[in-house]
Length: 140
Image (cartoon, rainbow, N blue to C red):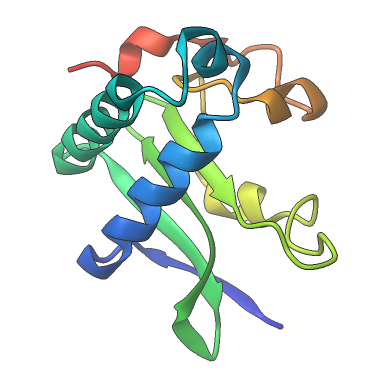
């Protein structure tokens, strides 16, 4: 399997929103406020949709080199600001997608200085010390 990074397309939006809402619902902060509530799902979908409409936001998609409709992961960021909003990599059947550089490839060439969403996986990842967690940078 060969992976390439391409710009996000309108056809990717549903996958991005759905995977973002579902995966972030597992985070400690969302569980504390009640991930099962309609308020979380509605509010998070609104936030994501607003971010995706911002002209400075860039979406990058990791996909199969031979079929760009097979998506392995994606990242939502503001490169000029150095802001990472979210990076998502699918779980493979045997975990071959995560921990193999897909997220790093999605962030390639961007000097990240802050991130807006902290998931449970963050505790197990080598996040650089200079990255600042700033959940408010995602709000418009």
